[in-house]
Image (cartoon, rainbow, N blue to C red; front, top):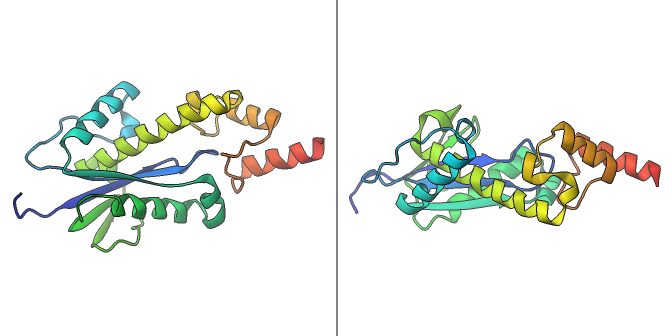
Length: 196
């Protein structure tokens, strides 16, 4: 191990969906083992994301996930829950980073210096790697959630407010994994109560 500065890249997946957790990842890349093709996870195909996720987990000096559940999101709001998931991801790293780079315009409360970079997932390899791990982990969880609640179509839309998801919410009301504080879910709950 050299005396190089350990920089953790941090990003999240799942701020916009109506259901499921927000998942954050923290990644410390190994400068001696570069990974080709790192980019913002949203610009990559699902297959390419999965391939890169395997490479990142195999070649990074350290990586970890953190999360905040739907109930926590409802309690503290999505921004605070996102920052909490990021803090949890960094604290789960096996190595303490010297500094952190986070995608967006807000830094979580960390014990090391942190810099927020807007669109950092497209420009900083460590943030790109975190973006990919967070997205692939959350997508896998939503596919599992689909097994429990197939009527909502989670495997397809991953909890985002698509027309199909909104229609399922209207028909069946929210499941325990839906975020009650999000307007479409609150409206569906209200409608379900009125119809009963």
